[in-house]
Image (tube, rainbow, N blue to C red; front, side, top):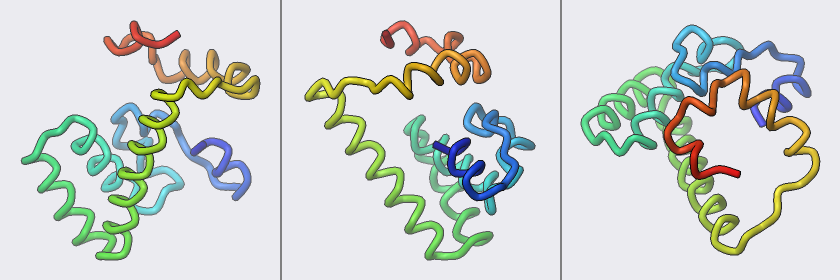
Length: 117
């Protein structure tokens, strides 16, 4: 989604930012590094890192961006859980792009990749 959004808005991004690459996170995404650290600490469930990331995002980007980021994260969790639980099929566009993105991001190296079809 980041890649498509960037293309539609004619912005250069590096999707390695979703893999924790700090230099890539800041390319083309305002507050990209701070947003990456927030999302990463949230996903890992690291309360200390989350508190630090939340404070940094608030300091750098302001309250509105922090609230929006928390809302997006919560909504993403909700949508993924609903889709997984009811077995929503993956569309053809996703399948066509999946291999390229998986290779580029090294998704196969994550332990959880064993649980993906």
